[in-house]
Length: 129
Image (cartoon, rainbow, N blue to C red; front, side):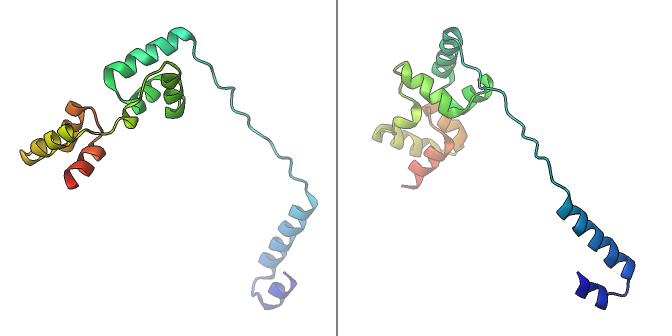
């Protein structure tokens, strides 16, 4: 900083900067920590509703959004109830052929995915194979 003062045309700016550095060194910064609230556990009734909702829409991301929990938590609840989640069920050869036919007919991958129960990414991956 002292070198800066020798080469600076504005000595008051240099003095101000030097004061700030000195002040920052002398003050002890008190850190405040913000703790998030503890995660709320779902009741067995809520888990039943979660399972029913997943059975209806087969979309873990949407269920997680509706229940305001993570997809990992949704997956864990479903696993505990003995439900295989969609991502662990690969497309069969018949489903791949059907997806290719629908795509060739001009249907969008999102619509095909909804009809067959897969994401549009999975449909596009199957069509490109």
